[in-house]
Image 1 (tube, rainbow, N blue to C red):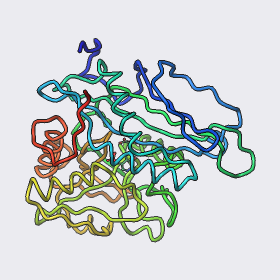
Image 2: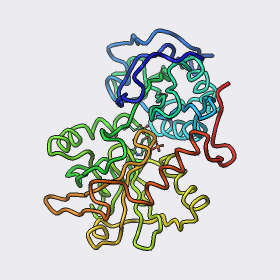
Image 3: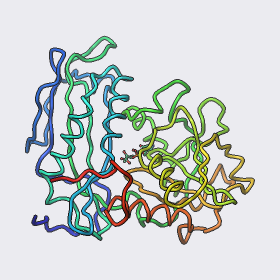
Length: 343
Ligand code: PLP
Ligand code: COI
């Protein structure tokens, strides 16, 4: 397979139009057979449900080239399931999970020339999504929907790759109690845009959101879950009903326990524990972010710097990151069912 002539090692996390995308339409109560198209544009009613009431849900996953030249993807069955759950919460007809996985593999295959070569640090990012496409004027679900998956080659989500970032405790909430924080809906990201623009203007890479009910517990960032390593070397993972069930985080919990022999403690984490020095390392994790170390947390001028400071990733986060990447890139044997090969 001849690859595209791109400067793979210097890609940023941005959109690039690739050759093929998958499209299926939902009409008269059923999803059609769907298929690949070269057309990257969408034409829809001025009154489409997605445009009026933000009826849209999405996913994110990646394809990798392994050291021995195979093209693989990572746990697409979990993305299929999460999209299914997200859709149900927004009264969107869910896309069948087995068809989701097949479509992901089809899109990767059709864009194989865009899957970055092994060792470049870049990956092919897949963006599946479903949105209401038929007109809606009263507040109700649309009658018709479109499911799409496009692919775009990406580099690191944060400039500097695995260098520690500074984050702030947000003044805004990203989720409401009993709201939509636990699903991947566009609306959760729309409401985070003002917060992220503000954080960037103030020199922070991301926001940490606190629990919306008491503003006491750590939830997650705008685009990733959070991990801590405590002073005993255990992995501590914030637990909440209003955060996204990250595929990366769930995988890292398994890796920590079964590959690295660590104790994993999923529990509610108070912000005050950070300032009490409970944790020596902190990072955020997600498909786009992989693991990015958090060097410093700032809460209205009150700052906490983790043991490894702003220069390098701590040893535990580093080990977690290299083990996960090793599994994804085929250098470390994966648990059964985690790697799907594109043939
Ligand atoms: N939390 C939020 C809010 C996200 O947008 C993402 C990205 O998908 C994650 C967590 C990480 O989830 P995953 O590891 O499944 O990509
Ligand atoms: C992902 O990690 O796939 C996401 O969707 C995060 C997004 C904020 C880029």
